[in-house]
Length: 162
Image (cartoon, rainbow, N blue to C red):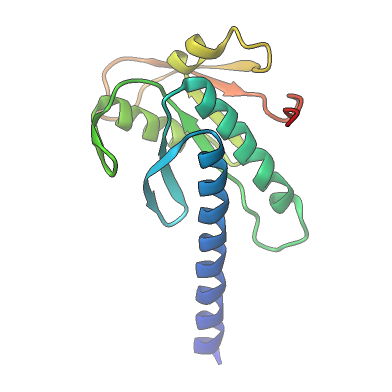
């Protein structure tokens, strides 16, 4: 009986991850983003515009927030980290300092948060639709120096009119 339960749980998880990927792909595509790499429930998405990346992150959080608060027993809570900069490589073979920094920032986020680097804030702070909350300077493994981070207040921001 335990094997049957484990199999059903694995099947449900597989379907949940497939549904999550479909939602992420659709929202990223709406903001001209491309999934460069995806593993399990994590994604590396690239954008030509920092504004587009931040709008996408906010829309992703809004899309998954009702699922997190629903009566389901398995909460879905996204951790989003954003950094802006040039990368080395193409498509699925991206690497370099900016890729590492983006991944470290994402790991620093808690469920339901969008954490961004000072570069992302610098490129987007003139947009009155974005609100940034300082999170201090952080040192990340494998990267020199301190990196200033900001949380993005996405819950209070007005939803875009489409």
